Image 1 (cartoon, rainbow, N blue to C red):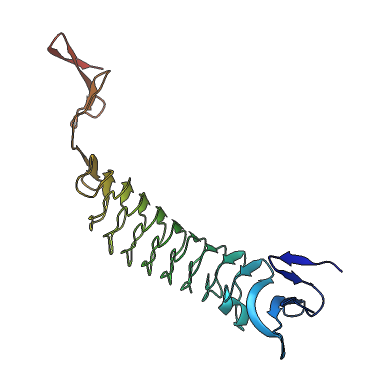
Image 2 (cartoon, helix red, strand yellow; image 1 turned 90 degrees about the vertical axis):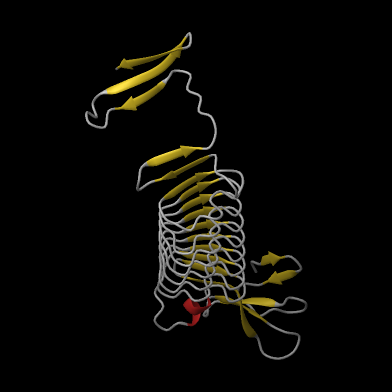
Length: 252
């Protein structure tokens, strides 16, 4: 008889557990069940699968298991309560306690880390890597967050990219922001902003995508000069260089 071995537990795929074995695989139900020392087996949702879906962990993909109209495919949930409420959505990956645990409408989301995207109820193509990352987002699409606690205040917003611990941590409904670095844009609440920083007080580089402006809070060094474009004649470009203390402007 083929067996699957867990730490401290032996699981027989085609027969009830015996002796110290506490789990057995119900082929008809397509899930592992727990057999206590006494009494009848009871479902604990330890491991569950159906066509193109896999859940590992108590209550992982739970609504997909018990839902009579559930039709979602290509979903993977690993961890207690991961993808707990998902029924009819496709291609979601949730790894970690509660990851994507509230999702009811949304495809192509990836959440790795405890409580990552735990509050998302409706959204697509969001990526959250890190504990508590994007954990307050209720609705939103196309957000990318990598690092602990990133965008953890965001309740609704889309098209944000944040990399670094606590980056863009204060945005509630912000969209279209790019924040890179530890605490980068941690106090930013508006949309379409750029922050590159390693603290929450001042960004070394910040910008506005709508106004098309960039601010450098420091010195700018350009070895080969700076090229400027004539706003009235966009085809005209000028290179500004300094030679022997003399500023030279050259049309290129």
